[in-house]
Image: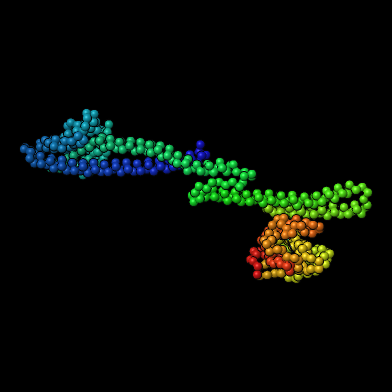
Length: 491
Ligand code: ADP
């Protein structure tokens, strides 16, 4: 049950509300109680003043000895100050009871008896003794059915010390407080019930869009990845969540689309050499009377196409691993100028076959921290392209130099160039500016060379760019950083 956000929200909300309501009610109750007690104490002090004024007046007016006038004066004062909730007790110098407002002065017989018992109680005796030592004292005394506020005041009469004690019944006050307590308790209970129910429905209503989003999201799969969650209000939190989710779906959709295109293009690329292989094998098998040279020629074609297939599969494997971040780079200190010289050496045979002049400038020291095999592969891809797309008798330049920002490898050729409208696409996978020409014969590439070269440059925190390409040729540049440096840009 507590797994539901609605329930948790409601419980939290109700708990906080309960704490607040209890605190407010308790504080209010305590303030009312304290104020009412203070008022009672003040009233008792005033009552005592008034009682003593009457007492003194009665004493002075009394005929006979003043000693014998104490009791009638006290009784007369009690009669004059008779009230339903106050009982007067006058104690003599030795603590003996001289006068008590005879009949229970509180309401009801029961409480009257209760007053009598309260006066007889040990608590009262203790309070009376305390009163003898203090001019004025105040205390709450527990009776049988209700409590009393006891007030004592010393006074002098007839040259002796007397003690006046007034017991004020707290019955009425307790009833008011009891009513307040009950009202607060009911208010809290009903308030909590209403707030809990209301809170639950409110939470349910507020979270309804989330539930709807969940239902909608559950329906989205690989086949309908283009569907999006409804955004009711893009500015509120749920709208923002839906927008974030939709952005995620967009990225997933694009990634799926790239994967689909990649697989479709890869299958397409593999089909051509496979079809050639099968065709060549069929031709070889269907002509039994072929000479050894014919067979050798067929085997040569089979070998060439198989090599092409292996190259494509290897490139595909590299890119797939690169995409999933699983291509381990074994980094070490690499002298880039040596790699450039080695690549130029490997490509020289190819250049010579096409009568292309290959010029190398790898004189300055360029120490980078990287994967030597991958860096070689990147440079070979660029060099291979330059020779592949340059006409016979042309020229290819490769140079490696150190710049203020890092190191730069430039590959320049005198080939036909890449049409301006296609230049932005040459780093895309399987993209070929001239598919017919690329696929034919030994020059055929699968359109993966530059994608791999770009990935290698980026995996080394560098860049690969087509600097220039026009009718006079093309210029590719790789920018890399030295060990412990981040590449800062071109200079
Ligand atoms: P490919 O295997 O087809 O060479 P790449 O990814 O290496 O694939 O190159 C993509 C395309 O870019 C090539 O098909 C070609 O049209 C164009 N291209 C690359 N390098 C050159 C270059 N030096 N001169 C002219 N065109 C180039």
